[in-house]
Length: 434
Ligand code: C2G
Image 1 (spheres, rainbow, N blue to C red):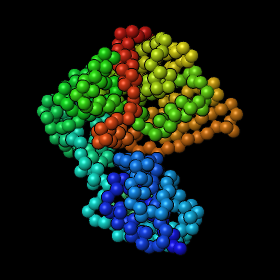
Image 2: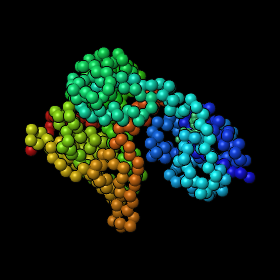
Image 3: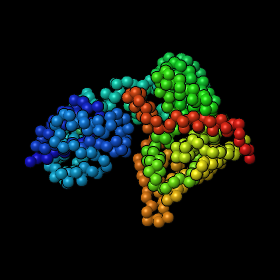
C-alpha cells in the first residue's frame, strides 16, 4: 500500500483544494490530510482564516477523498507524522516548491501544480471588502494603516485629519481635511483615533449614519455616553469595537485563561505599569491616563471585575510631570496601576495569587511571553506565543471577521468599556494631586 500525506488550511474550500486532494490521492492508495489548527496558522502569519478548525475538517471530510484526517498543530510535525504513519509520499501544491525538500530524507516529496486563478484569500476578499476610513491626527495611524495590509478584506479609503502634514509622503490615501461627514459618505466603517474629547461625537455621528466603528479606548470619557453608544450600535445593527491592542494579543489571552482556571489560586493583587517617553506625534496633548489608562485598566477589570469597593486616583498632571497612579480596593483583592508619558519605569505586570504568581516582563502590553512562578521553583512554567504587529493586525482581523460572519466575539466586554469610561471621568473630577 502506498500512503500519501498532504497538509493545508482548507479555508472556504474551493476547486483548487479539491483538485489538489484528488491528485494527491491518485498518487497512492491511502490519503492522510493534515488540517492546520487555528493557533498554528496564527503562528505562521495566517490571521484571516474564516472557518473554525471543525468547519474546515468537516468540509474536507465531506469530499470523501481523504481516508484519514489529522490536525497539524506545530512546526516540524510533518516529520513526526511521516514517521508515525509510515508515509511514502508527501504531496503539496507548487506554491511551496522547494520549501519541503528537507522531507526527502523521510519520504518522496511531490509538488503538484497549483490550480491557477483561485485562492481562499481571493474568495475572502471578494466576499465583502470593508471600506475603512481613518480619523485622527496621530502618527499612530500610519502604523495602523500599514497593519491593514496584512488583513484580507479591508481597504482604506481615506483619512479625516486636521494635520495633513503629519501623513504627507507616509500615507498614500485620500485626505478629507476636517470633513468627517464627507468621509462617512465614502466608507462603511471607520477607525477613530482622534483626541479622546472628540470621540463621543464622532462615534455617534458614524453610528447614526449606520457605519461600523472601531474606536481607540477610551471610547468616551463618561460611562453614560459609552452606554448610549453601545445601545445606538445595537439599534442600528452596527458593530462598535473598542480597540486596546493588548486585548487581541494571544499571550495576554492565554494568561487570562490560566488565571481563570486557578493556576495561581485566588488572585489577591495585581500591579501593572505602562510608561513611555516617545510621545506620538500629533497626540501630544493627551495625558498619560488617556494614552495608557485603558491598557493598564484592562487586566485589572478583566481579572478582578468591575465591582471594586473603592478607587484612589493620585496624579500629577503638569507640564513637567504627567504621572498617575490608581489604587483599587476589592472585597478580597487589591490592584495598582501606574502610567506616565513623562517618567520611565519598568513596564511589567505581576499578578499575585494564593498559590503562585504570573510575571510578564516589559513591555507586558505587547508580550509574546509570560511566566508562572511558584514557591517551589521547579514547578515554574514559561509560556511563549507568536506575536506579529503588536496585536494591531489581530484587532483589525477580529473586526473584519465579526462583520463577515455578522457576529462578534467580545475581546473587551461592554461592561469593561463602560467602566473604563467611568474611571476616565473620575480622573477628571476626583483625583488627589501630588
Ligand atoms: N492549492 C492549490 N491550488 C490553489 C489553492 C491551493 O493546489 N489554487 C493547494 C495548496 O498548494 C496546498 C493546498 O491546496 O497544497 C491547501 O492550501 P491552503 O489551504 O492554502 O494551505 P497552505 O497554507 O498551503 O498549507 O502546513 C500547512 C501546509 O504546509 C500548507
